[in-house]
Structure formats: C-alpha cells, structure tokens
Length: 150
Ligand SMILES: N[C@@H](CCC(=O)N[C@@H](CS)C(=O)NCC(=O)O)C(=O)O
Image (cartoon, rainbow, N blue to C red; front, top):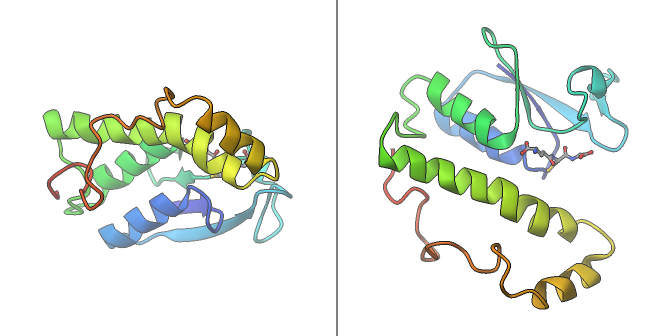
C-alpha cells in the first residue's frame, strides 16, 4: 500500500493506523498548497479533489475519504485488530468515524488552521446547539472509541 499524506493533516490517522497494524506501506508526502508530491508530481493526477488521505492499494485501486481509508486498513492488515468484523461494535465505530469526519473535521479542525479563527470561535459559541458542541453519547475523556479494544 502507498499512503499519500501531509504532515499534521487528517491523513495522520491513517499513518497511525498503518503503524499500529504493522503494515508495510510506502508514505508519500504531499504539499497540499502546491498540490505536488515530494518528487514534484502533480497530485491532482492522483486525486482530482487534491486532498489527503489517498491510499493506493495493490488490488483495489485508489481509496479516498478518511472513514473508508481507515476501515480499509483495518480490514486488509491481517491480525491488526483495529476494527471489529461485524456487529454493533462495528456500527459504533462507523458512527464515530462519520461523526468525526462530518461534524468535527470540517467544522472544528479545519477552521482552526484558518486566519479567521476568531470569527469561527464566536460563531460556534453563538450556536451551542450544534452537533459538534453537543457530542453524542459524551464519552469520558479517556474512553476508547469503540469502548473495547479490537
Ligand atoms: N472528505 C475528505 C476530506 C479530506 C481533507 O479535507 N483533507 C485535507 C487535509 S486534513 C486536505 O487534503 N486539504 C487540502 C484541500 O482541501 O485542498 C476525507 O474525509 O478524507
């Protein structure tokens, strides 16, 4: 597998998953501003969205979108124990992956990197009803998601 990533971007989750799984993988850094890979290649040719993570797989082509990439790594790294195979705990894991990607990633983390951070903070305070503020099922600070390790 080959992971296109950018340091400190959300692709960090997949880097951690690959390390945790002990997977053999190539890591290709992407300059997200220039849309170039470390060797100068056009990253849009890899992902027309110009976003990381992208996982190049041996058998299934290119995989994008964080929740899908993470589940792909979990499912294709033998004995990784990163995700349950089936049942309620797998749905719970998918719940959190989707919540993080849809409610937290774009609403909270991306704006943190923007200069208009102040305005974003004020707008978030003005909307305490927002889903990202009212975390579903409020896990305790040290809780693992899902609750038991796999
Ligand atoms: N929907 C995508 C979003 C990925 C995403 O926003 N990645 C950011 C890095 S955290 C990125 O590549 N940003 C560059 C850009 O959008 O131009 C996913 O969940 O994988």
